[in-house]
Length: 356
Ligand code: NAD
Picture 1 (cartoon, rainbow, N blue to C red):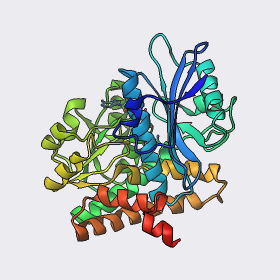
Picture 2 (picture 1 turned 90 degrees about the vertical axis):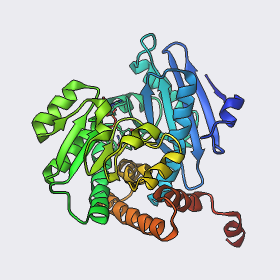
Picture 3 (picture 1 turned 135 degrees about the vertical axis):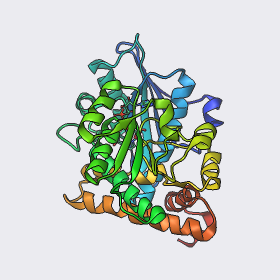
């Protein structure tokens, strides 16, 4: 059912970045077609969510798996966790819908990796889905009897980092600050709730009108069409949908002073962070501010004492401020400083390794 990747397109991919292992898994009986990417296990087993999604092409799914898996390594390293980075994506469509049998087949594919990769819920997968995966493998976090939904912890980390970024850039607290939230899924909705409680003014957009209606009612949020949210005259833009929201076109129209949101891989290309810096926008590196859910899942996976999660999530704004200070001192972008700090932890430079 599984086979190692031999496609040179994978080796040449910009996000391949020396992945330790990429597995293509198929199960004709259930319709499973999945890619499990393990980027790096230097610091520990690769923990990363399972995205179940309808992709435009297999190449799109490969790119997503590689990019997400790589960012999980950086996220764990920067959060100071003894974990590596990996990600699973399952490709669904109308002929191959998500079913319990498909989820169990996913569990079998994960099980064959012997614990090098531990899955969890991700975009398009739920706690109930993880219960099904767990019937075939113990290498799961996020089942209903385990860690459960990581989204509230992710939202809390984003909220705390946004608070720190607003104080850093605008010298004020969140009361009265205008935040444009794109995406009202598990994280975006929880974040909007926290912002509402803190007295922020919220504008939202989502492709799902029911979610927009709920946010309008519950949080007094204003709403705009999806295409208009990144150009809102707001203090903060919070991308909480899928990746790639910060690209040449959207950055040209951006009017917020700060970008801080949960979405993974917000920058469409590395040049986009330079564009943000040139425009004077403070970009909070996505894999740093969205690490709360990983910290939550890690407590269960690593069996850490209860109560450590919140303390650990509270460190995220401190790490952000250290990175912003280093960026200001060196003239590097916050993303470049975050990358270097994380990389030094999981791939110590050769000279340091020789000294060790
Ligand atoms: P989700 O699937 O629950 O929600 C995504 C939301 O985005 C949905 O409401 C969907 O309708 C909306 N959406 C999709 N495309 C859109 C578009 N083009 N415009 C506007 N809205 C759109 O996912 P989630 O768990 O809330 O995660 C959101 C983002 O945060 C993802 O990028 C995910 O990778 C990242 N993230 C999530 C967690 C977590 O704990 N769930 C942790 C780290 C990072």
